[in-house]
Image (cartoon, rainbow, N blue to C red; front, side, top):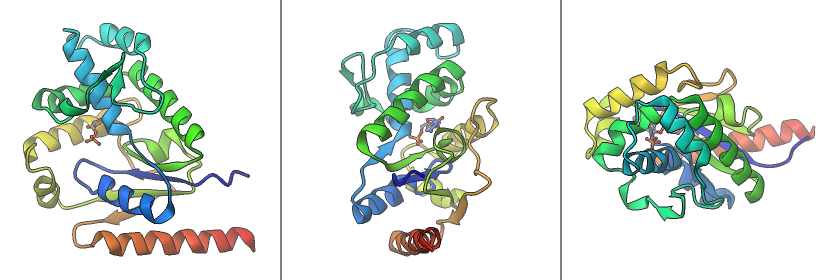
Length: 212
Ligand code: DC
């Protein structure tokens, strides 16, 4: 039985995954892994290489040949893409790149190695509870009213986040979705502290249940 603490947080753009993830990580002394950042960095690197994001074969080859820094998923082939992760062209390309199975295979492998090397963590994305860590200690699926999500991602705009959510939810490989045993939380009207308290309580009762 694994005692490694893995907290999986999935949900659409602007549902509050990073904010909750960071708050939980500091409460539990864990590190956070924002898996979206490496999908974004890979998309930025693909664009920079002059590859059409829709060219599945070329993107797959690029992903398989890429070297991703073991500790920092936004560093690809030795280059740090952190300043470009939220660029408009990356917003446009990332969901297309992320739908390619070979891209997911490469990044999921990297994510599992990261968690192993860090002895657990708070991992946020779209397929963490369903595919990457189906045995996570706890799986959260966050939702929020579209208006609130748009406000949280004001620079991107509602039309763009809705387009990404549609692409992310309808792709064939690992679509965005709640795992059967996940806990869905609507973050529209809750504070971060409210949710942290709820999650810590649930983790404690789970722990007591497993010790009994
Ligand atoms: O979390 P984010 O908005 O930064 O993620 C950017 C994109 O990356 C998202 O629209 C889809 C993709 N993504 C994914 O397919 N799987 C993940 N686990 C995380 C992100």
